[in-house]
Length: 91
Figure 1 (spheres, rainbow, N blue to C red):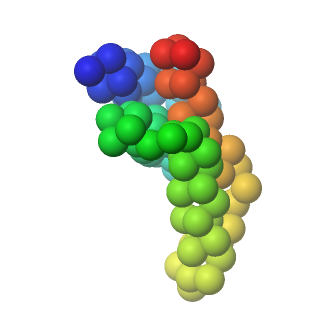
Figure 2 (tube, rainbow, N blue to C red; figure 1 turned 30 degrees about the vertical axis):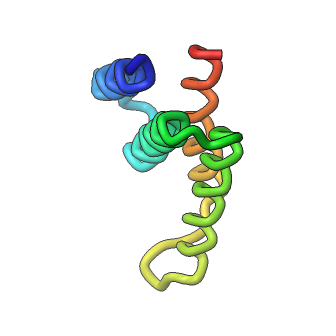
């Protein structure tokens, strides 16, 4: 339950005008990382932070082979950062 609450707090914080300098795409990656971390903890994964990073990497590798998107290392960083923030708050 605490992971869900923390994810909601992050959503609220990212929706404020203070974070207008962070590109919307990176905010979405951050939220996805937080959500993936919460879900993987709920599902009792052995290493939820590693899972978040692997999902971020695989998504970007998929983008690299797509005609509509491009590979962006900062997307991986933003996705992983969402998991790291939840991990650091709950560890």
